[in-house]
Length: 159
Image 1 (cartoon, rainbow, N blue to C red):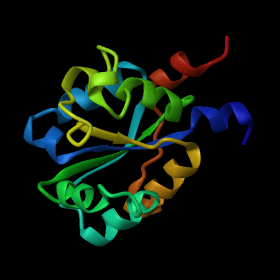
Image 2 (cartoon, rainbow, N blue to C red):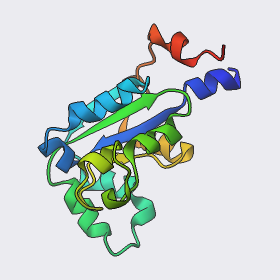
Image 3 (spheres, rainbow, N blue to C red):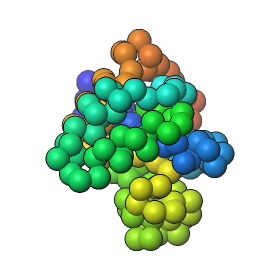
Image 4 (spheres, rainbow, N blue to C red):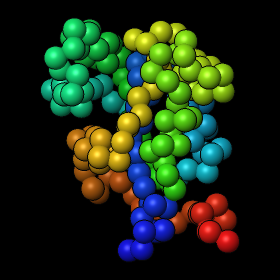
Protein backbone atom coordinates (compact mmCIF):
# COMPACT_ATOMS: atom_id res chain seq x y z
CA UNK A 1 0.00 0.00 0.00
CA UNK A 2 1.44 3.38 -0.99
CA UNK A 3 2.07 6.04 1.67
CA UNK A 4 -0.59 8.24 0.03
CA UNK A 5 -3.18 5.46 0.38
CA UNK A 6 -2.04 4.78 3.97
CA UNK A 7 -2.45 8.46 4.88
CA UNK A 8 -5.90 8.43 3.31
CA UNK A 9 -6.80 5.37 5.38
CA UNK A 10 -5.49 6.75 8.65
CA UNK A 11 -7.91 6.07 11.49
CA UNK A 12 -8.65 7.66 14.83
CA UNK A 13 -10.73 6.74 17.84
CA UNK A 14 -13.36 9.09 19.29
CA UNK A 15 -15.61 8.78 22.34
CA UNK A 16 -18.70 10.86 23.04
CA UNK A 17 -18.44 10.87 26.82
CA UNK A 18 -21.38 10.51 29.24
CA UNK A 19 -21.95 14.28 29.44
CA UNK A 20 -22.11 14.50 25.64
CA UNK A 21 -24.59 11.62 25.47
CA UNK A 22 -26.77 13.07 28.27
CA UNK A 23 -26.83 16.47 26.57
CA UNK A 24 -27.90 15.03 23.21
CA UNK A 25 -24.68 15.95 21.39
CA UNK A 26 -23.99 12.65 19.59
CA UNK A 27 -25.38 13.89 16.28
CA UNK A 28 -23.51 17.18 16.52
CA UNK A 29 -20.21 15.37 17.11
CA UNK A 30 -20.82 13.01 14.19
CA UNK A 31 -21.83 15.94 12.00
CA UNK A 32 -18.58 17.82 12.70
CA UNK A 33 -16.55 14.88 11.42
CA UNK A 34 -18.78 14.23 8.41
CA UNK A 35 -18.75 17.90 7.40
CA UNK A 36 -14.95 17.76 7.41
CA UNK A 37 -15.02 14.89 4.91
CA UNK A 38 -14.20 12.03 7.26
CA UNK A 39 -15.71 8.58 7.00
CA UNK A 40 -17.25 6.67 9.92
CA UNK A 41 -16.07 3.04 9.83
CA UNK A 42 -17.20 1.79 13.27
CA UNK A 43 -19.60 2.89 16.01
CA UNK A 44 -21.03 1.45 19.26
CA UNK A 45 -23.34 2.74 22.00
CA UNK A 46 -22.40 1.08 25.28
CA UNK A 47 -21.87 1.22 29.01
CA UNK A 48 -18.10 1.03 29.52
CA UNK A 49 -16.66 -1.41 32.03
CA UNK A 50 -14.17 -0.38 34.68
CA UNK A 51 -11.67 -2.90 33.29
CA UNK A 52 -11.77 -1.50 29.75
CA UNK A 53 -11.63 2.10 30.96
CA UNK A 54 -8.57 1.36 33.11
CA UNK A 55 -6.84 -0.12 30.06
CA UNK A 56 -7.91 2.80 27.90
CA UNK A 57 -6.60 5.43 30.33
CA UNK A 58 -3.63 3.39 31.62
CA UNK A 59 -1.15 6.22 30.95
CA UNK A 60 -3.08 8.33 33.48
CA UNK A 61 -3.22 5.65 36.20
CA UNK A 62 -0.77 7.45 38.51
CA UNK A 63 -2.52 10.83 38.24
CA UNK A 64 -4.61 11.95 41.24
CA UNK A 65 -7.75 12.40 39.11
CA UNK A 66 -7.66 8.83 37.70
CA UNK A 67 -10.31 7.30 40.03
CA UNK A 68 -12.70 10.20 39.38
CA UNK A 69 -12.12 9.87 35.61
CA UNK A 70 -12.99 6.17 35.65
CA UNK A 71 -16.07 6.86 37.80
CA UNK A 72 -17.22 9.69 35.50
CA UNK A 73 -16.82 7.55 32.37
CA UNK A 74 -19.15 4.97 33.96
CA UNK A 75 -21.86 7.48 34.92
CA UNK A 76 -23.80 6.74 31.75
CA UNK A 77 -23.53 5.30 28.27
CA UNK A 78 -20.89 6.41 25.80
CA UNK A 79 -20.60 6.30 22.03
CA UNK A 80 -17.33 5.01 20.61
CA UNK A 81 -16.36 5.55 17.00
CA UNK A 82 -13.60 4.99 14.49
CA UNK A 83 -13.16 7.67 11.84
CA UNK A 84 -11.06 7.39 8.71
CA UNK A 85 -9.45 10.01 6.50
CA UNK A 86 -6.32 11.82 5.50
CA UNK A 87 -4.36 13.09 8.53
CA UNK A 88 -7.39 12.23 10.69
CA UNK A 89 -5.55 12.00 14.03
CA UNK A 90 -4.25 15.57 13.84
CA UNK A 91 -7.34 16.97 12.17
CA UNK A 92 -9.65 15.29 14.69
CA UNK A 93 -7.71 16.97 17.50
CA UNK A 94 -8.30 20.30 15.74
CA UNK A 95 -12.04 19.56 15.45
CA UNK A 96 -12.26 18.48 19.10
CA UNK A 97 -10.23 21.31 20.66
CA UNK A 98 -8.04 21.57 23.76
CA UNK A 99 -8.69 19.33 26.77
CA UNK A 100 -9.75 22.35 28.81
CA UNK A 101 -12.86 23.79 27.14
CA UNK A 102 -11.96 27.26 28.43
CA UNK A 103 -8.78 27.08 26.33
CA UNK A 104 -10.55 25.66 23.27
CA UNK A 105 -11.30 27.88 20.32
CA UNK A 106 -14.91 28.65 19.40
CA UNK A 107 -15.92 26.35 16.58
CA UNK A 108 -14.31 23.29 18.18
CA UNK A 109 -16.49 20.69 19.87
CA UNK A 110 -15.07 21.42 23.31
CA UNK A 111 -15.01 25.17 22.71
CA UNK A 112 -18.69 25.13 21.79
CA UNK A 113 -20.04 22.46 24.17
CA UNK A 114 -17.47 21.69 26.88
CA UNK A 115 -18.15 22.84 30.43
CA UNK A 116 -14.94 21.96 32.29
CA UNK A 117 -11.89 19.75 31.85
CA UNK A 118 -13.75 16.93 33.59
CA UNK A 119 -16.86 17.44 31.44
CA UNK A 120 -15.43 18.06 28.00
CA UNK A 121 -17.85 16.03 25.85
CA UNK A 122 -15.41 13.98 23.76
CA UNK A 123 -12.16 12.04 23.75
CA UNK A 124 -9.98 11.75 20.67
CA UNK A 125 -6.76 9.80 20.18
CA UNK A 126 -3.69 11.99 20.65
CA UNK A 127 -1.37 10.07 18.30
CA UNK A 128 -1.41 7.40 15.62
CA UNK A 129 -0.01 4.87 18.12
CA UNK A 130 -2.72 5.72 20.68
CA UNK A 131 -5.34 5.48 17.97
CA UNK A 132 -4.29 1.96 16.99
CA UNK A 133 -4.16 0.85 20.63
CA UNK A 134 -7.56 2.35 21.45
CA UNK A 135 -9.26 0.97 18.34
CA UNK A 136 -7.91 -2.52 19.08
CA UNK A 137 -9.06 -2.25 22.71
CA UNK A 138 -12.66 -1.32 21.92
CA UNK A 139 -13.32 -2.98 18.53
CA UNK A 140 -12.61 -6.31 16.89
CA UNK A 141 -11.24 -6.13 13.34
CA UNK A 142 -14.59 -7.45 12.05
CA UNK A 143 -16.40 -4.46 13.61
CA UNK A 144 -14.38 -1.89 11.67
CA UNK A 145 -15.98 -1.79 8.23
CA UNK A 146 -13.84 -0.66 5.31
CA UNK A 147 -16.12 0.80 2.66
CA UNK A 148 -15.79 3.02 -0.37
CA UNK A 149 -17.51 6.37 -0.18
CA UNK A 150 -18.01 8.08 -3.53
CA UNK A 151 -16.78 11.30 -1.99
CA UNK A 152 -13.39 9.74 -1.11
CA UNK A 153 -11.81 10.41 -4.49
CA UNK A 154 -13.10 13.97 -4.60
CA UNK A 155 -11.74 14.83 -1.18
CA UNK A 156 -8.49 12.93 -1.13
CA UNK A 157 -6.92 12.92 -4.59
CA UNK A 158 -3.76 14.96 -4.83
CA UNK A 159 -4.70 16.71 -8.11
